[in-house]
Length: 344
Image (cartoon, rainbow, N blue to C red; front, side, top):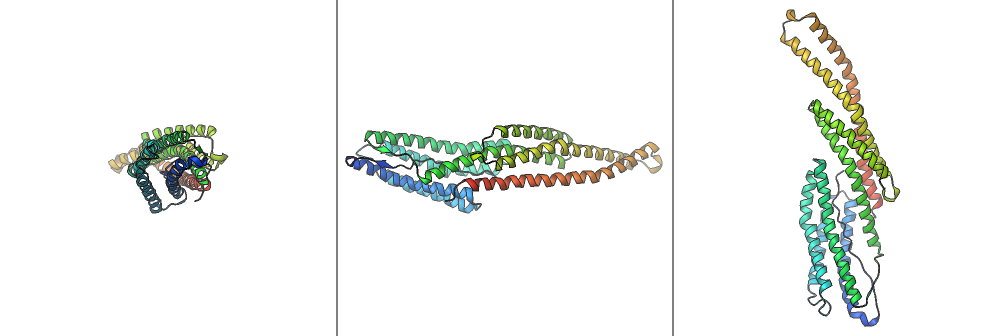
């Protein structure tokens, strides 16, 4: 399961209460609030699409709709040249927020998607992708903090009471942020062993004994590290479904390092001895072969024939367990997000 690119916009949806004499500044803020509310709702549609849809086209359509909603809002806010009676600080901060949001969602998105394409080529690439994705969200949310601060300054200046964001949309966004963050933490633990395992499998395919030993050691180490992290991991709403799926992958990977890899190495070394003995026999005429060479070769043939069946059973067993563990994690990860991220 590939990690998802999610936008964690935390734009405040505000409500205003005030006496009649403050009607004009309240109207000004309500006008702005109407525009930011549209963006917040469009952002939620994008987040919901990421969580509940596997249709890449649908997800990208919602992203483009989000960009358009930001552009439309920016034009309307930009038209308020004088802000409220010449007070333009809040207006200008909002325009800055919209400009940065559009850039991050539009331009930076393409860079991140490109990073996502290669993310699974190494753990370092995956970490870089996730860090870049989080940086986009951090930059946007930094502007949100500035915007909210300016909003409070404006409201205080004109004696306006700003209500807390208790809207359903605000709650949904908060929940989705927490769910995706929880999923990402477990995904990185899963990916580290899963990637190392893929490198181990390549080493086996290449008959590279040194690489097999090196990567089986790394796989055991990363499995142990992951199991330790799970002991203190705080699952979202105490839902252990993805934690347990991750634990199963780690336990399997550790067993793979301790049982499967040594079995593979032993079989490869036996086969290597057989091939060396066979070469000696092939290079000599039948009447030039010593009794010791013939006995050694026959002994290796018998041993190899015996071990082939054992090795095939071992390979089949671990291939099945590996497939089950990875498929279970992917399905559980999808179910975890679908279960906890509210449906639009």
